[in-house]
Amino acid sequence: MLTKARLMTSGDWPTVSVVDDDPQIRAMVAEELTDSGCFVLSLKNCLALDEVLLDGTVDLVFLDVQMPDCDGIECLRSLRARGFSMPVVIFTSLNDPERRRQARDAGADDYVLKHDLLHRLPGLLERFLPRRPENRCQ
Image 1 (tube, helix red, strand yellow):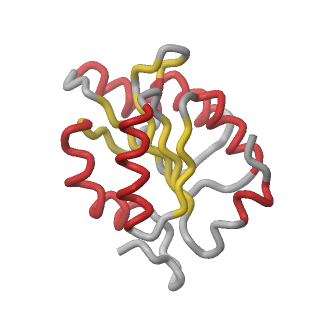
Image 2 (image 1 turned 180 degrees about the vertical axis):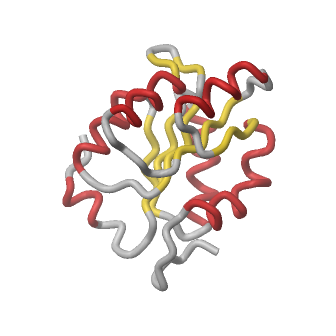
C-alpha cells in the first residue's frame, strides 16, 4: 500500500496512475510517462487505485476497461460518484462505439485504443495535466 509520504516523493512532478492488469502494458506506459517527467503509480486493479486515491493526490489516471477483477468503466463511474474529479483516460483494445459511449457517460475525459496510446501520450499529457511552472511533462 502506498502512503501519503510515498506519494509526496513525487515532488513537483505530476502524478499519473496507470491501471491495467497486464504488467507488460503497465511497464511500457510507465516508462513513457517517466521519460516525460511524470511520477508514475503502476497499479494492477481498481482496488489498488482506490487505495492510492485515499492516500494522496493523483493528477491523471489511465484506466483499462477489461480487467479480471473489475470493469474500468464501472470503476470510473464509482470514482465520479464519490466526487473524484481528476482526468481519467480510458485505454482499451476494444474499438466498440457502445463501450466508448458508456465511458463518456461514466465521466471519461478520453477513450484511447491501446495501440494508439503511446503516439497520443504527449498530447494527452499536455491536455490533462495541471498547468504548473514546475511540471516537467512536455
